[in-house]
Length: 147
Image 1 (tube, helix red, strand yellow):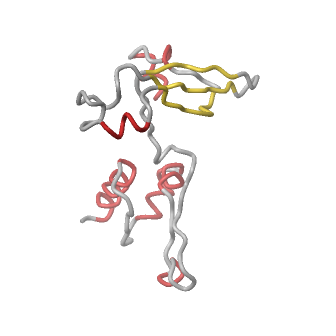
Image 2 (spheres, one colour):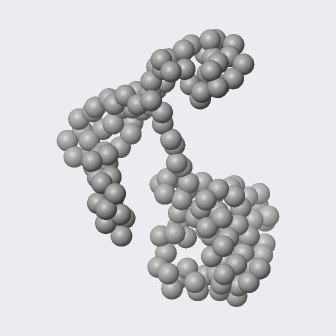
């Protein structure tokens, strides 16, 4: 489904497969200069127009590295970040107290539809977080169980 979307809107030329970002650095105004700006960039822009981002990307097949220059960077870390972060619960104050299950949004999204439906159906669910993945899951739970 995603590949057909990318083909339809000619996005494949912007996607680097078999790569991972290993570093991001902002090359622009110094921290001191940025601290003196009354707005983000002194111009109302997020960053100074003379600054650029250097993005180091490693090819996972041959381990070679390339550096790309960009005017802006968007970090989207959440449901698909590959880094689930569950809270640490004090002893006897976590899920074992209520016989519940703690599931990260990444693990939930990786479940088969039938398994996910079985997990939430008829249950009272608490979603911690209000970003896109949290809201998506809250809507799914409300659709399955009512408000």
